[in-house]
Length: 281
Ligand SMILES: Nc1ncnc2c1ncn2[C@@H]1O[C@H](COP(=O)(O)OP(=O)(O)OP(=O)(O)O)[C@@H](O)[C@H]1O
Ligand SMILES: [Mg+2]
Image (cartoon, rainbow, N blue to C red; front, side):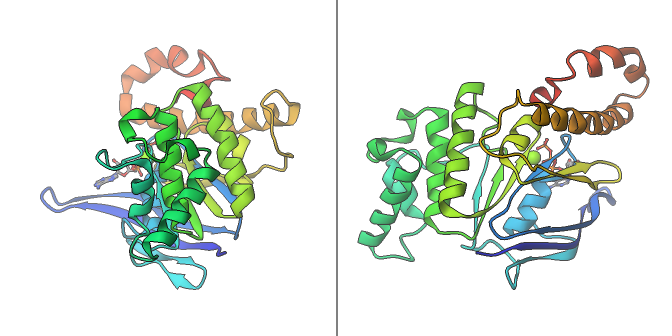
């Protein structure tokens, strides 16, 4: 297992045609310990996906570096598995073939099949190995993509709003599933979400990111025993604390984006349902 060290990472997108540039964040330092479950939380556009893609090696940092264990990230690698919001399975392949696809070069066909079956079992999809993606629900497809990422035996699992497109009940089931997987495999998990409750349910630590200037604005420890219940007092109090800080960030974004309209609509936009804000932003 490996830890992830993000050192002075910055990202500026250059628009060469218009000769403009936009700095999403410029100095991110974060050390995710081996086996830790860390969430990246923040308003839309703060750079959560950008940071995750840099760790995945799918995008390049403009400054700084990311180390996984002792290795510097220079591109995608088998030490980092990625799960996105959309499962992106190959529709013409069975569930089993989808999971085997990424590992067939590294293992014999027999071994690849055994591994794929093992991980499909871990995500409770043993009965669906011969099904095709269109025969599965959204939650099942997401479980296939988790199995596909795990079958490569990555040291770190990077998840970008993996349950963002799912309904509340499916999402809640997958929360249990992902906790089970994390406990069973001991993987380091970095999980992007804009849902406060989801981040408290799952994480050891929550990294709150802000905008303009972008970067880490706070890191919350979640010292609550698992399984966690939103109705518990300590859960609710942390949720409240994070909501308040996140609301401040969202207000900042809305003020900039809406200009004068913001002031006339502020009350309805921000304070209609404070507690639910984490689920709905
Ligand atoms: N390829 C790109 N070129 C230019 N700007 C980009 C590019 N990708 C992202 N950005 C900008 O960088 C900022 C951060 O984007 P990012 O997708 O990382 O945000 P996010 O926190 O993941 O948001 P969301 O919660 O909506 O997914 C945004 O302002 C976005 O417009
Ligand atoms: Mg994103």
